[in-house]
Length: 242
Image 1 (spheres, helix red, strand yellow):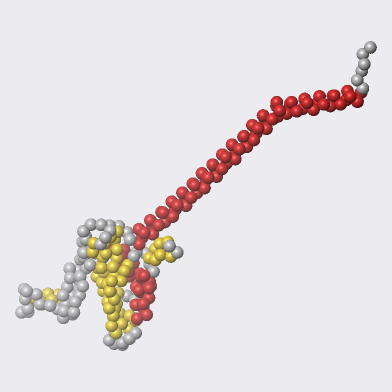
Image 2 (cartoon, helix red, strand yellow):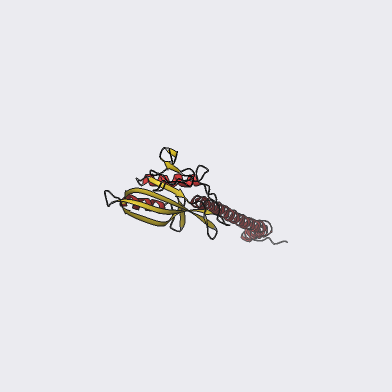
């Protein structure tokens, strides 16, 4: 006669069987899937990191390009590769006007001075005003181009004061002065010193105390006698005998 297992033992065996089946299913089915899911998560994280790095590099490149373009623009504004004498004279007159003075004479040199990698164009200016207006003019010219916090700041062309001479105006005396300045404007480029084309396309003449006249200048008050025996006066050329 067959002996039967007690019911508690049967229940325990059934529970143990379920546990074994569950563990087997986990190791056979769920284990590999979880490992695959972990691998996918790592790939996603690596891909996201690569995307973030690429975005950061792209943003940095864009910012770098903006900075370089801005630097080139400011450099070109401070030292262009074209003379543009009309623009130089216009800017100088504007700075003088902002300083409260008016140039009585402005004469650019006809030949630029070739330096290392760039050229300087001397421009002679004269004006009558007071000492404080001269100081303001020099300050404004100096601050057209400056370096602030390691970066170039340019609001106009680069000028350098080559020489400054002034004396008391007579009359009324100091602080009223008569000033004579030589201002250098700069052009980017190399080579021999080129001929400077003045504003208007011709040579700019100046009037001396004796009435000597340049190509487009005006006649002085006293006149000068030429080799042909004619006298230059304010009214024109008159024969010496008439």
